[in-house]
Length: 427
Image (cartoon, rainbow, N blue to C red):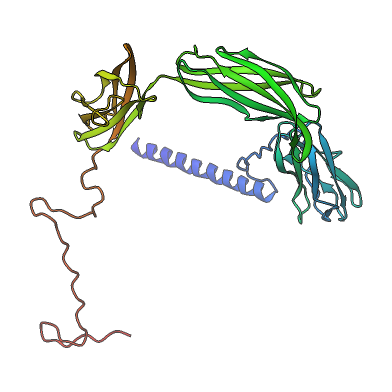
């Protein structure tokens, strides 16, 4: 039985090898018969989507185009800001292949636009690159350009430039009505000149937003505007003494005789302040080490030189470990119109910002006033151990380990320690 099992097992193995050989032979015959193996998947190339206005066809290979432009610069000269102007840049394809613009021209400013009738021009065919310039809102020298991409290898980018000196039809001097700092309880006035062409005038002006400010037209008179005859109207703005402390903002509208600019807006701002001022309002202690002591000072004074007293300096908030110490002294001996306040403290541990608020309580003419002073700074983080030092090998318990010096190479012309002559070099 054992002998028969071995014979059967051997027969199975021989049968499998024979089948494999037949399959290999058939596979080889199929290859010789012209059949090919399955190819690995090829990468799929995804073409980008065409942009709006861009020519989707590629430039044909073959004879190159040649764009020749009659002019590449244009000067509009002195012009008003009221009307749009145009310029043309003629060109011609003097090459032997088609001239293709890849897209409509692009401009360096939103006030400018360039256009082409089409994007492809045959050999010998000409065209025009048209440019429009809207000067509204511009003033003075304007240097702009329009660019177009082509398939001309000698000029892949066409750049057309133009210049204009824009003169504003209506000018406001100053453009922003700023009163600056005004002491509370006191009136203030500002004059603004609104200029325009000859026979121009501001007929009426009033506030459309804001309170505590009145507006009126004082007069209209002839003047010179950019070396030309013009006219200007003087508008007066008055800040009422009852304006509260803080920032006051308003908007006034002036009606003019100019048809294209019938209304002109004027922005107004003022900062109403009290007699007492704190300088600086923010006390910067700089960059400190953890737990480092510091001393800084600020000043409280009267704008008009009137005497006052400082009743207290209270700490409202703080990130520091201890209470800030303050010392009040007269800025000048015997004077009660200005004081210096010294602030002493200790920086918090690294990682904690320096932030504190001091409330200063003052009294003048029986009226109490308050002002907050911000104390701020930075705590420097400690350097990491060994930062900035060269790397060294250290053996435990032996300090710094110095590697041994490399042994010197033995001389070939000397005998070794056993007295044998040196081995000659093998050639």
